[in-house]
Amino acid sequence: MSLTTAIEVVVLVVAAAATLLALRHALRLRLRQQEYERALRDYRSLARHRLANPLTVIRGGLETLRTQKLSRRQRDELIEVIAQEAARLESVALDPSANGDEERGLRPDPYDRDALP
Image (cartoon, rainbow, N blue to C red):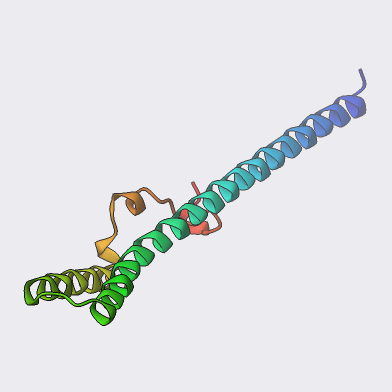
């Protein structure tokens, strides 16, 4: 084998290795993107759930207060439930540190260059 042929073979091997590395990197980024999109969907679903439940209780409680004749004790209990749900809603909406265990496992955005290994 001539020196020129050997050099051409080495260049082809290096180019093939570089192509494989680039494909591997692109695949890893795509997998991270899919993981991030799934985590984002899960988070949005969880956030809707954590916001919708207190709102439903508040809305239902207010409707009950407006339309039903309740004893003083029942009225006070319902007002207390509404106040508790309002506080829970406030906590969920305004205090990011109040996240439940479900949110703690979410990973950073895979497109964040600082987060990439």
